[in-house]
Length: 47
Image 1 (cartoon, rainbow, N blue to C red):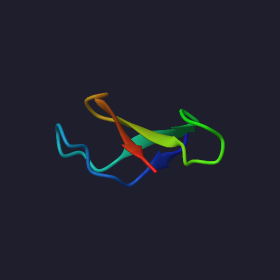
Image 2: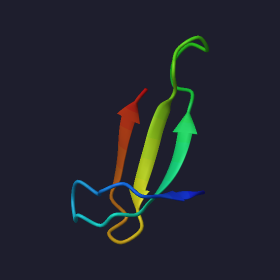
Image 3: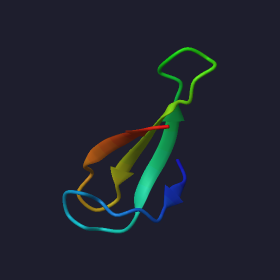
Image 4: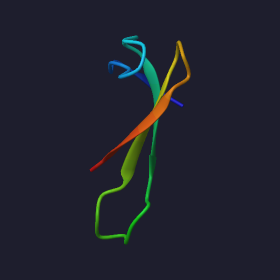
């Protein structure tokens, strides 16, 4: 999993693993998941 510069909403760390999941129909965007490298908190952003 690649690591990107993004701020964790829980601990404020600025690095997280990221991956994309096709959660809806193929013509829509996927869901981007992030997992903090420090506290392991996982969150997602719909694209």
